Length: 411
Image (cartoon, rainbow, N blue to C red; front, side, top):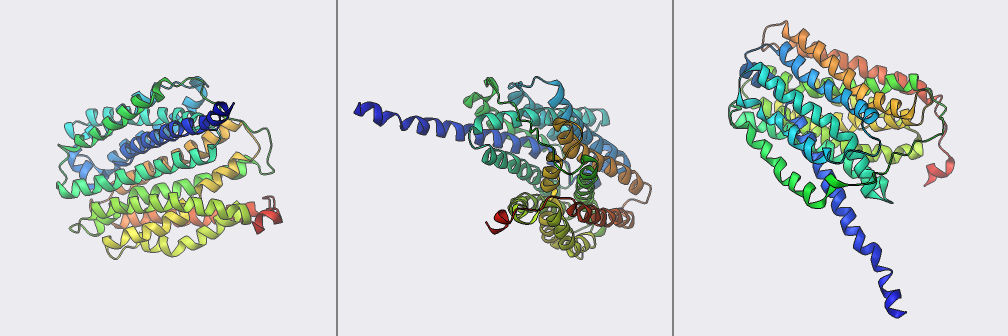
C-alpha cells in the first residue's frame, strides 16, 4: 500500500513536462510561421521595386493580395477541414511557409508570386490547426496555452520584420542569399517530428458558447475593422515613409525595427489591457487607448529621424495595436451569426479589409514620383480618421456594454 500511495502523485508530474514541451514546440512553430510572414513587411520599397523592376503599386497588390489570401484561408479552413484536425499540417505548412524567403532566387514576377502565394496559403492553413493542437496539449491550462501561442506569433512576425530590414540594409538590397533564412525552419520541423505533434489524435474541439451577449455583432465588427485597418496601414507604410524621408540613413533597417517594436509592445500591452478590462470594461479601455495613442501616432507619422521611429512604434503598438484582442473578445460575446463566423470575420475579415486598404493605398502612392514622401503622409490621414472612428464607436458601445461587477473591479 505504501508503494501505491507513493506512485499516485507522481503521474501528473510525468505528464507535465511532456505537455509543456509540446506546447513550447507549438509556440515555436507559430513563431517561425509568422516569422516568414513578417519578412516582407519592410521590403516593398526600394528592395522589391528594384528586384522586380516594377512600381510600388504593383508590389502593394502582390503583398497585400497574399496577406489577404492568408486572412481568407484561416476562417475557410476552420469551416471545411475536419473538426478533429489534420495534424500533419503542423509538419507540412511551416516548410511551405518558408518559401517567402526564396524570393531572391529569381527576378521573375511569376516566381516571386508563386513563392509568396504558396507561403501565404501554408500560413493560413496552419493557424486553425495549431489552435486546435494548442487546446489539446494545454489540457487544463487553456488560458496559458493560448496566451503563449498567440504571443509567439506576434513575436515571430515582429522578428521577421526586424531581421529582413537589417538584412537588406547590410547586403545593400541584394536578395540572392535571402533563402538562407528559410533554413531556420529545419530545427523547428525536427522538433515537431520529435514530439510527434504531426501524429496527434483526438484533438479537442473548440467549445462553442451558447450564451448570447447583449451587444449585436454588426456593432462590434466595424470596431475590429477600424483597429485592424489602422495598424495595417501604419505597419505597411512606415518603412516606405522612412525610406522616402531619409534615403541614406539605413531607413529600411529602422523601419523593420519599428515594426518589431510595435509588434512586441502590442503583444505585451494586450496582457495589460486584458487585465484592466476585467475591472473597467473593454470598450472603455479601447477609448482610453485611442486617446493615449494620439501623440505617438503624430510622431510616428511625422518622423524627425529614422532612429526615433522604433520608440514611437512602441507607443502606437501598446495603445492602438494592443487593444485589438479586446475588440475580438467583444465580438466573441456578441450575438448574431454563428460563433465560428463571428470569429472568422472579426479576425481574418478585419485584417483582410485592412490589406485591401493597403492595396488601394499602394496603388495611390504608386501614381506619384518615386521617392516622394507626401503621398505616404496623405495615406496616414486615413489613420487619423480610423483612430477617431474607433474612439466614437467604442464610446457608443460603452453605453451598451454590461457594467463590470463591483467585485471584479475591486480584485
